[in-house]
Image 1 (tube, rainbow, N blue to C red):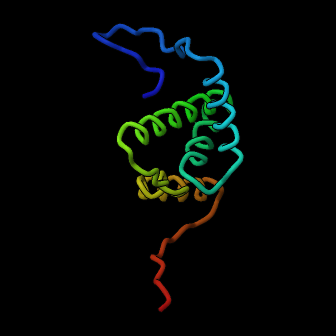
Image 2: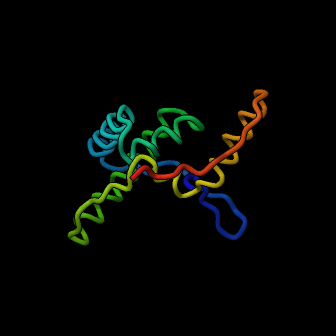
Image 3: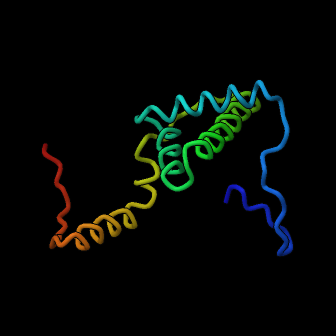
Length: 120
């Protein structure tokens, strides 16, 4: 979990370390630009985190993800493959379905689910 730096039951500081301020500001600015999009994995990550933690913390977290992605691209010589905007929903589809049904039932709706068949 980001920001949870714990060892032997003792919590250590989880602040961002002092680094190149120009690189840090460029990465955060890029992360904020990603946050204004809606069609990729990093944008979905930004929106998930911003809902819980706020825009600034989400931007720093996405900036860290960008830095890790760039490192792996350079180090391994690979190509970046976007996981897609629905990655988080697909990964935990049962949980998302359960939460949405529960929200509708709390609003007073009776919900029945049917699987969608593909039209050929």
